Length: 147
Image (cartoon, rainbow, N blue to C red; front, side, top):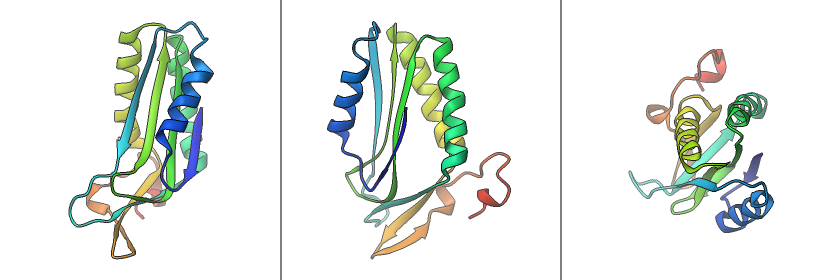
């Protein structure tokens, strides 16, 4: 399940909804990661652009990996502005066993940071400034990788 939201994520609502949706799937673990925008380098927050077709294909490939382990993968991400101390990213794995969930979530989050088609901007004094020094070029992205 891939969900995109305008602005910051409502963490409690999303996690509670996912928990209620998946708790009867006879799995023993619901492992989550919540990303929170840090107050650093003088930014007021972050802003995000998302290229949905590539993100969906990337996520669908990960869903297949999760199915191989009898697990479910969930993810929510913000589009637009997210201020400091708010959440822009949540992911989770619902799996039969704890170890499978922990391993799958770790690999998923690391791959997300490297390959998801999401561009990050710093918010400073009401302006969006592309965070080029903290961005990675997407493999095979051509022009999309060099915003």
